[in-house]
Image (cartoon, rainbow, N blue to C red):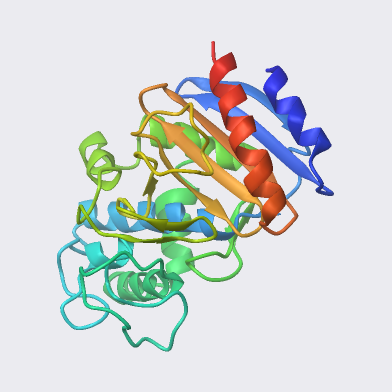
Length: 270
């Protein structure tokens, strides 16, 4: 796929990118063996772990978790009122607006840890990483942003989100639909979105202007980007996913480079 050649001209030391469909890898390019910090793409893995736990009856998506009045569902959907980083105190009303929150993911991970009676990193490994064959990836930090892994494992995640195996299709469909519709909020580094639609850990493209996924994906596309210059989007209508890993922190370069790459990939999809 010629579109992926673009990463070779990006102002980064190392980069890797790949395109998958549910049945396999379409194309990959770059330093695919390197272990990269996924940053906030980690939230997709944490969300999957919570969804597995919900299906196993370890947790319930609508049980209390986080600030008073909040549930597991609120924490995953950035609707708990918790700030980006905090000591655990809410700064907004539960369900009042979409406040992107690392703290919310730390709290949902601790909630799962207590319910499962095992460290969150162990649960993540046993419930998600091992079943998906992500043998080189590991959680080295927080449940919000601490996963490291190679491109192959990111593409395995993309395939899983196109055709789920560790959770039921109905569970993933619920998680990738808008949770608490109509909430406004700020999409980090991209500004205020009205509404700022989000699923359960998955950001939803919808009709947001100036978006990192570009303009060619469908409104149903979902995914996440990370502060380490990384992203994964999955488009169920196109039946494809694009993953990118780099070792340069997110910045203006990424806002300029990502959308054209995504649009070019969509144009070339077989």
